Image (tube, rainbow, N blue to C red; front, side, top):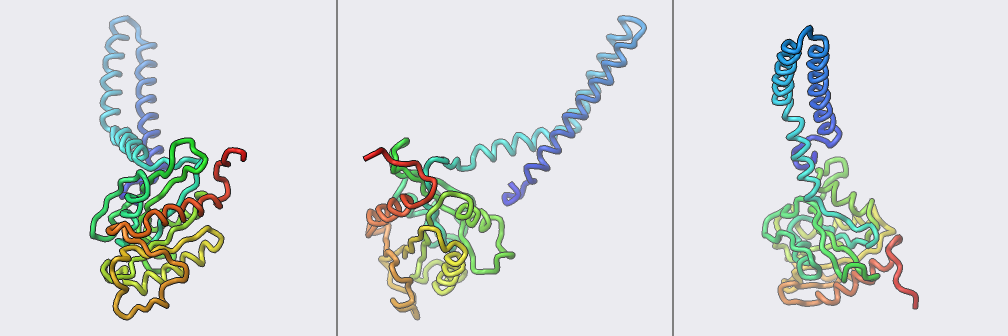
Length: 263
């Protein structure tokens, strides 16, 4: 909510509570006046006046209710993570092809465009049938830039929180072709990889080089690519099935996943 330019949930709830209290207080005051009226006509007039006052207070404080409604709508749009299914979290810098991989390997349909920070929130796809013991979730996340931890924005924080707080395996996606912009230059991607790998050394981890149909960027050698990196090209369909198999194997090692049927 805050990352989208809104208020924290606690502030929204407080504003709504202030509105509710003002309306209830005004209504009780009107009832008290009517109860102490000396005649039925005076009581009726007091109630009518009180009703108008309640309406006036409600209109004056209506922003508190509208904020709550807007917040509820925002929360409904957030991805709902299944607590009994592990998550393969796709992490990487902006515009490296994470969304294309989600589209190619799961039920997710994230935005896929050639501009940075296309993914502005967490997006979920699913692999496997609902209720199946090998079902898992595939999460597309906002890009993480190369900068100190205390300078990261809310979207980057969302990505790192997903890895930290969910029963997850990490799929670190790199586009080392040099075609995804200066802020996601190949050398920077490799440095971000080292940052995040050091932060989560115990997570199941897979390095993926996306857009592998394109050559490595000028000045980058094969030795610079982390050992064990899987080359994937969604455009050509290269190693997409192999990637899905790798991810399924990784999430099977995530603690807390739903156990399979007895053998």
